Amino acid sequence: MTAQDYIQLKLNELKKPVSLERPGDNDQLIEAIFKALMSKKFRKYSANEDLQKHVRNAIRINVEKNEPINVTFLQGAYKLWRLEETPEADWAELFSLMYYSNWVKPVCEIYQPGVWFDFFVDDLIVPKLDNVDLADIEAYIRSYQTLVDFLKPYQPSNLKMTITTVGSKFSSPEAFNESLQRNVEKLTAETPGGLPELTESQRAMVELNTKPTDEQLKDPKWREKVYHLHNAYMATKAEPGYHKGRPEKIMAFTQPLPSGTTISVGTTKDSVMKFWVGVGVLKPSDDSFRQIILSPGQLKETRFEFEDVRIEGLEGKNFKKVRVLR
Image (cartoon, rainbow, N blue to C red):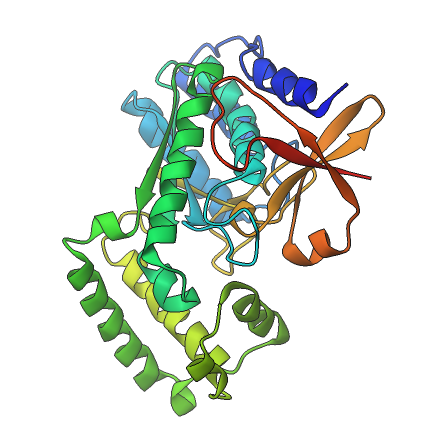
């Protein structure tokens, strides 16, 4: 089987029904939706009791209103600057979108209003944190939207995927910047010494994502300052009330967050690497493949070859060939 044959096969399989029966009453329906969303086929990490209660309650709220189940997925609106694929989405995004489509497909089958899967993406903060041009952020969002549109014919008709930027929840970029400045000042006043002490993993995260300027590199505390800004941004991101404190929203992410408030589903069956900071590759498996997402470090240590791919309707500079591990 060629890489192209495999990818087309997996796209076509998205169309196939799961053949589930609709439960008889609302209580049974709520429980069936809960089991589908918490399925260990997709969930990579345990879910605490509070999260389980929240998910059940969110399902009940939407079912009683006869509205789509709202899954809100948190992500960055950029392709890591270290990758040659930047600034556009690549196979990592497509594989993840297919994986999430399969995750919620059973819900769409048993619940007529379906699922609203909303990607809540960090945009205006990225140039400030990572020194990436805003034009690159906009190019990423456009390419990501193109992928969402491409997948639509393969998905259940009652699955709606949207991209919502954090910036769109503020009246203007200026309003966003004012909020960010307030939260930086507040956090600085609350933090002993004015800056956080970083763990090794936090330092590594900053070093992976940030493209430091020459001026920053002269400052021994540049990593702490970037992480401090990131922490202040978390408060700004929450201010519009779009994603936090919303009982009807089910939050999702690749890995567990300290808050414990997300269903952590990874990015493919075999990966938990964030798709926006990694690349999608195929790993041969018998006469087929597995979808994998590799970090820049993993990619450097991996042997691969490119295979040409032509999928009708799939456009973009990163979809003419795919890496196949050797």
